[in-house]
Structure formats: structure tokens, C-alpha cells
Length: 86
View 1 (cartoon, helix red, strand yellow):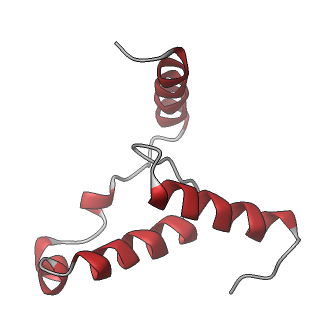
View 2 (view 1 turned 180 degrees about the vertical axis):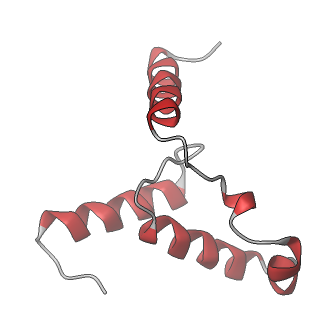
């Protein structure tokens, strides 16, 4: 059923969702009509995901892949004081 790390991560996500009841999944942030111009443009949709992710108060990736790594790196730099990111 998955590795120990995956189980621990799932527990952490569930705990976070219980604490912060006003969380939103990405599908609830924009209407179908608002996303229509981007449906056939995967790179533009990925750019929207990235912008929303780095501007959010909390970022919880659904899986650890390139986007999660990029956002986590961006946020670490932003809050570390090592680099100014605009």
C-alpha cells in the first residue's frame, strides 16, 4: 500500500486539512469558462498552476515531481532571505 514515507505524508496532509478548513483544490479556484482558453495548452496551464502554487499560503503537492520540486525550491529561496524573487 505504499512506502512508510508515503503513509506519513498522507497523515500530514490529512492533519493539515483538518486544521485549515478553508483549503481549496486547484479545480475550485477557477471556473470551467475561465480555464477554457488554456485547455489545449498544457504549458500555459502548467504556468497557471505554478503561479497559483507560489502565491498560495500553503502548498501541498499531490505527488512529488518536477512541479513540486520547482515550487518548493522557489518557496525555500523566497523565505530563506538568500535571494530576492519577484
